[in-house]
Image (tube, rainbow, N blue to C red):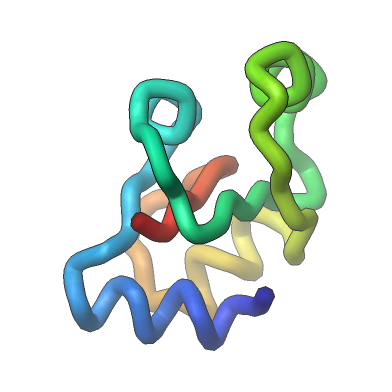
Length: 77
């Protein structure tokens, strides 16, 4: 899983941003976190038994995905 997959899902409108969305949603195809995600966020995902892949830093992800905000958790539905 990669940034490319997130970009493709964004074009289709299938990306959720943030920890709350990742925890609330059922049947996600993938969850990705930034390398510099806060420990508390990682602990919440682990406690909920959500599997995730670690990508680049928040700043790098925002730049590559052409976002005007930084996000720690990306979910593909």
